Amino acid sequence: MNFLELLLTAIGLSMDAFAVSVTNGLCCTNLKKKQSLLIGLCFGAFQGLMPTIGFFLGKAFADYITAIDHYIALILLGYIGGKMIYDAVQDAKQEEQQPYALTPGLLLMQGIATSIDAMAAGVSFAALSNINILYAGVEIAVITCMLSIIGVRCGKKFGSKLGSRALLTGGVILVCLGLKIFIEHMFFS
Image (tube, rainbow, N blue to C red):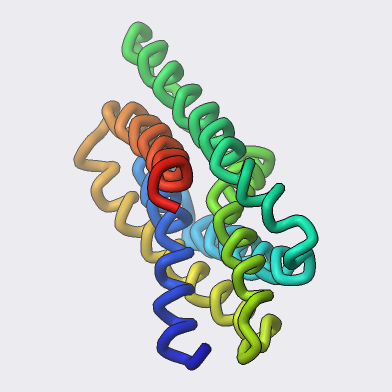
């Protein structure tokens, strides 16, 4: 796998993390640059680590991983998005809006949910003879980190325009992302 192929793979794998980062920026209007960096580092670390784990698990567990990865992503993103939608509806009933808090536990769940498909990609990397998995993992991590930080900043910019609908919009995006991953794996892989 050459540099360009790996770069395009890294960009493709990072799109889920980018979408969730936009959602975080939409919903967490009080995010600072340090927190944006933390989101990028978290998503980058998971996106770089999961293909490496998948690579070393290799063919021994490939069928098991690809058989359930889309269910895990659907459940995690559906839960997070569903909770955001519920919170948005509850906030709409109250006069004062409650700020959406991105807790370390929620960030960890998002990191896992957005990187499960990267583990499956790592399993497929094991079949390639011309790949340095450590280099690939680092490149995927760096690309994901950069795109996630950009995603948070974009979400923050548009979040102020959406106002109280940002939480609802973010929840719908996450649920749709979970459904997209599930449908792709069920019908197009």
